[in-house]
Image (tube, rainbow over all chains, first blue to last red; front, side, top):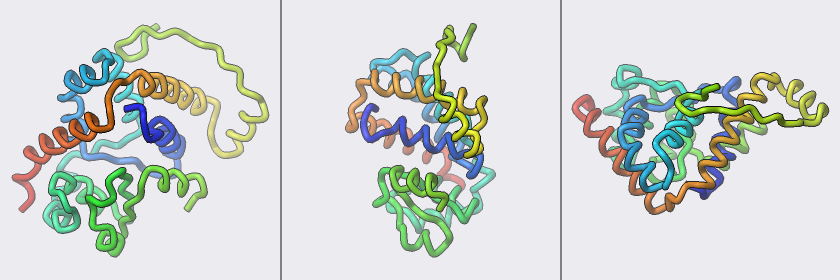
Length: 134
Length: 77
């Protein structure tokens, strides 16, 4: 996708991985790769090109398996508006204090998450905070 | 030379010494700067070349999240 400054956001986050851990549910990454033929077809890229982009995006990301956040999954379901976002909230709970970076803040119950030590930020705000060391 | 599964070439890039010093003062080593520039170039070129619309990306994102949730939901209790 060529909109919304995805490269700048990814770059800024990669730049700051010495100061913070970047994590994602491993199962999401596996599904992303399982859908790579469909994604590359719609993007007009070769599968190799897409794999290269995914490798770059994920090279400093710790992919956490279900065992790393399964105990929080039930609690996480109460903190999201769409159950498919529960893995992200569960991982954030398991690693609290933490930050969820998303273009879809409305999918998360931000105030309730904040009470549990989790900020939900858009990429632009997250990058700004990283730059200013907040 | 190979870069993952793709053949790679080396591109000389000049960066002002002042910028490198600034980066090093911020804790960004030359090695890290090199790796970041490589990632930035790859991501920027591929993102610019992608024909994926936001609507398509949102739809694919939803499909991927649903597929992952089908695997994870049995563990929600």
